[in-house]
Image (cartoon, rainbow, N blue to C red; front, side, top):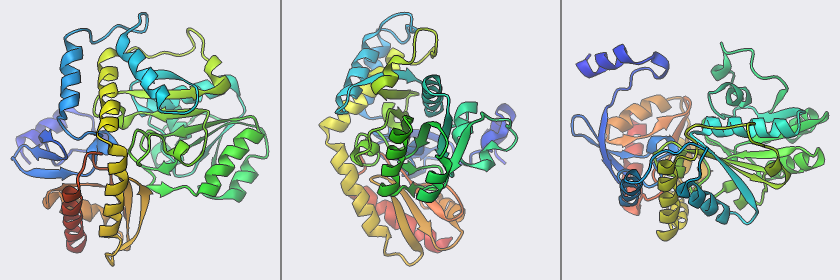
Amino acid sequence: MNEITLSWQRNFLNNYGTPSLKLVSGKGVWVKDSNSNRYLDFLGGIAVSALGHSHKNIVKAIKKQSKTILHTSNLYQNQPSLDLAEKLRSLTKREAKIFFCNSGAEANEAALKLTRLANKNTTISLSNSFHGRTMGALSLTGQKSKQIGFEPLLENINFVEPNDLNDLAEKSKSGIGSIFFEPIQGEGGVVDLNYSFLQELENTAKNHKAFLVADEVQTGIGRCGYWFLSEAMNIEPDVIVLAKGLAGGLPIGAIMVFGELQNTFNPGTHGSTFGGNPLSCAVALAVLQTIEEQNLLENVRLRGEQLVRNLQIHPQVEKISGAGLLRGIHLSEPKAKNVVEKSQNNGLLVNAVNDFIIRLAPPLIVNEYEIDLACQKLVTAIEQA
């Protein structure tokens, strides 16, 4: 065991285990480790590095904002947060108001508090879902393995099986106040939700005068080829939850609030010390502008289709789920973790969400050559595992 690994173990709690790789630099879709080995980054900081590494527009935004002001607190106005809020509002066809925080978990906490303040009836979430690690977000998460040891969690949350219309009907018989869903379940295995099921979620919310919350922490901000996947599927949530790729690597979270819920929070009902800080907001604005200027939404759709074409013919690939550049490679054998290790040895970074599924979430700037090369490396790893 080398000294860096020993030092890591001495200094950090063990909630992540000890990473086997130390990354020291990156450019575009490529990263380099402490031994100068290069890797194609097809995990992208778990769907965070939307523009890849060291993108010139992000670097420029950081430099420019760092020379003026980094933090103001929410006792004062700042221009970058206003500019970012206006930009986000322009990306939807509906009138929205924004709340900024620092992560997806915090954004889901805000959405849960907001909806419960407006309607205290039962919340519906989906089995296999993931909404974060804080207590409210964890209570919404439909994975027992992540909840064990932290009980008692929040009450009045019922879990519905994804794509099960009968289960949804049964568990929404009594009064419900809100419904939380991911358009594609990311941490749960890149699980697609049927369009008919999504429609019924929306109809159920409307029939019960409940609030529909789309957790687009992984699927939003171009990851699936659209700004917001829920809206691309003709669903109109009352809240859209954002984070991850929004600032391309800096911490940020947000909720976009529509309709009557906009009047629910009043001064003192919720807050975030660092939420809406000028630096993260300036960088997030640069990310959104770059996605527009470089037509990256189309690139995401094209590269996602290319990835599927390359991999779906492999005999050990049962199916490919997801959309755009959020993809789950479903293997016929339970060897996903071995494939991750072999891929890393081959110069490709991916991750296993369970024993059968490899998740791919490369930067939105990935090009045709890099997709082909990554697919070649992944196929080799599947055959070696």
